[in-house]
Length: 358
Ligand code: HEM
Image (tube, rainbow, N blue to C red; front, side, top):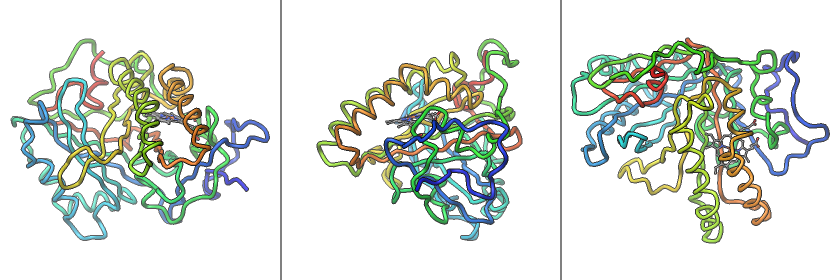
């Protein structure tokens, strides 16, 4: 018996019809997290430092950020966090944590009691490296996650009370929207990047502390891949057939994202929490789109994701759908007040700073 992705308490009479084809049987299973009854929002924060190159990083900045993860009363600390890094399109090296809290109040309390906020506000923009703080606070109606492996929840799903049974709404284009409770009654339209009032030209953001305003229905995807548990035959297949097309798709969005409403995209590594080496065989694309429709459009019609999706079906069939590869994604569609982006001495192509350029 397949389960509806939207929990009972969030179901509403739809004014936006569901797109599940009649008598649809998903070709492979997908699961979601069932969060505790009392939880009605969550926080995902990306906190870190930016260096001109990997060799410019002496490890002090990430050590400081990790120290904060363990500060403050235990009940206020992040429920889950991991260390991540990426070399971006300007060859800058970014290292930080991606951390989750089970609600905005607990996050706010943590920023005070750990003295993180005091520290963040004291940082100078005239340093030899940059800092970034991106705080995303969706209500649960504006968040959905799906993962391929029942026993391996990722990201926010670590805060689950239980894991769902096999889901009905997945494996067809449009299923992401069908899993989002807010999309039952709202098209979740945003302001298209092309038409928005971005100032033409580049902005020099180095040496400055810059905040970026929240945008109507900004859509964020974190899409993760974990091949650490694969046996040699599957690992080889993943690295030869899936990984190259994934990189191609992510590079397209990183370098030409504007064509499809993508403000920013990076393929990050989840790194060893102590050595910070990218040897964990885990990556994730973290992308910011002007709205859900733009993300849907790219995934359904751009050759790069068609290649990823098509490649995956061939891959899964070759392995008789007995995969050790773990996939997940998290989608956040945010109101302006559910977003906070602040960058200190970061280049203008960092995260949502991209949205300031025309
Ligand atoms: C959906 C495969 C990476 C964006 C899907 C689905 C599969 C898939 C099988 C259908 C999921 C379902 O509903 O059951 C893959 C594989 C990837 C990968 C194998 C990497 C190896 C990515 C990345 C992004 C992305 C990095 C963007 C950052 C999407 C979106 C959907 C989707 C937006 C939902 C489409 C919709 O429901 O309308 N992908 N994907 N994927 N993927 Fe990917």
